[in-house]
Image (cartoon, rainbow, N blue to C red; front, side, top):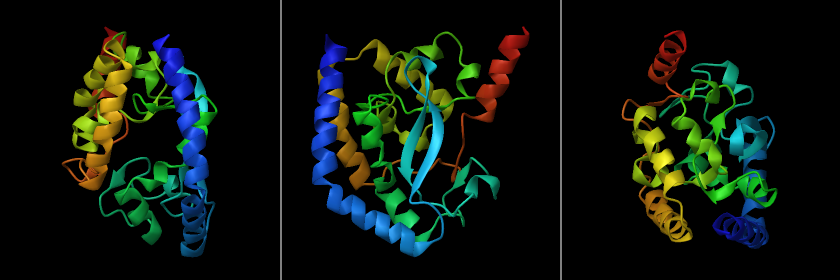
Length: 212
């Protein structure tokens, strides 16, 4: 019942926000198009609930074909691939707004573990796979408790804890705390200045488990 109410609230709030924010979304789209060549929306395949793949939507914040340049899937704090408009969008997490569409489509929630890359989940152990039992979210327990300043080793247990302790009140607290995180720009980048993907150390540990 709690999950049904969560889904209904997600879609209802998503529709309201999509209408209310449509002028802002239009302005951002125009700014992106004027700032650099390439599509307005960045699309990428991600793992959803139970590992089902879906295409996530974001406003493009980097030069076109950036994934095949520089650090690839990794992102540096002063990455030259990030556009002028992209820096602004990332600083305020406005690039995530198109994910409201993913929420309305039932692929995501406002609150939940961040959606992983599809090839990352094959390295999950049985405990880590619990983060796939709920829809991925725009914000989540790990995001309001460190975000990218946390290593993947630190983030994964927080996501699993959220799944094990989910309640509508917890979602409300996370949603409210997210605005403080955004206002003070907490945890935008890792302590090293480079945001990793799933994390080489976790992949190495996962491969060791598979071989043992």
